[in-house]
Amino acid sequence: TVLCTVADAGGLALAWPLLVTIAEELAGQRKTTAATATALEAVLRYLPEVQAAGVAVDLPNVAALAARKGNSKAVTVARRIVGLQDS
Image 1 (spheres, rainbow, N blue to C red):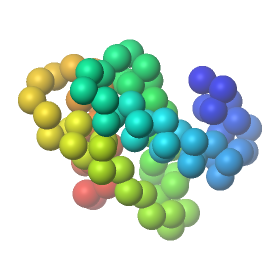
Image 2: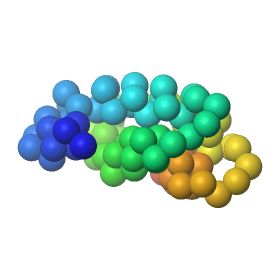
Image 3: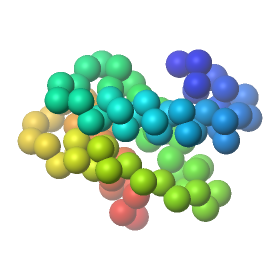
């Protein structure tokens, strides 16, 4: 995605708030789509770096998605994000 390109070019501080907003919005929807999984994968990719920088990360919709039943890609990635946050 464009935001990943920006983040990879040294603009994670600019891209991160948008990534989180998009991921939270999509994770809060009743139905997940491929776009949900893609946004969550971006969050998962950059989360360790953001946490290492000491940035607080609050993702309540992602946590709620992770708690859902099922094994869709979005739910699986949400569970991985929650696992990183708990470690």
